[in-house]
Picture 1: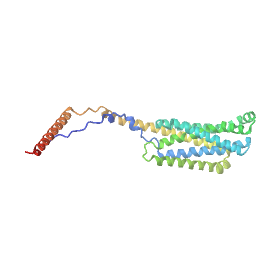
Picture 2: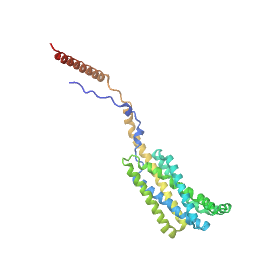
Picture 3: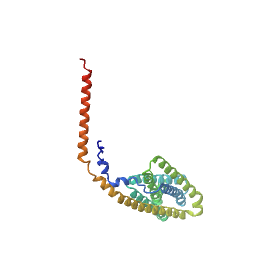
Length: 282
């Protein structure tokens, strides 16, 4: 009875570092990503609706005003999406940190729009003779950065949503759907609730508070992600060392396998020769 011949271990697979197995670690639950996308989308649209109300005492509530506000807000969203895409492919903890930075930036720029409007409205409108240029410049100075901050999280959240998930298409679809629902909710809340009940200033303070809460939650998630990765690394390190330095198969298995192959080849050749001799006539 011959001994079973064991195949040699795959050293290329065994030498894979333990950090490679951490790439699929889910940094944040999916419900948190959906909630974050909802809050950011709603906050961005609330600021857009409030922007027209804030500019009305200085430039009027006209078609030019709303055209400038919508164009500036969309420009901020586009620039924010591009900037978020630059950091979306980084590790999960770095992405969560950038989400916190975007939330802090959104809170600061949203609050800063209140005093900034009083400071720059006079010089900007007096220095520009064209009323359309004055409206666009004023909207750009006040609301581009809040919209830029609101656009950063979307690509980062999308990258985190498809990480370590088999059904990434459904995850992306749900994320975009929640973003649209948040934008609708923010528009309706600003138009029918916040401005009439709270006023412009308190509405912006509420948005800044939502951005701050979003930033704190992302910081907490980033800290938890770092702790999980450290624990998994400590558990995988001994196993990875054993796999990396596993010895090659003993030479006796190779010699036995070679002898077995030679014996099988010789027997096959003898059997073929006997068949050919038996078929020869005479």
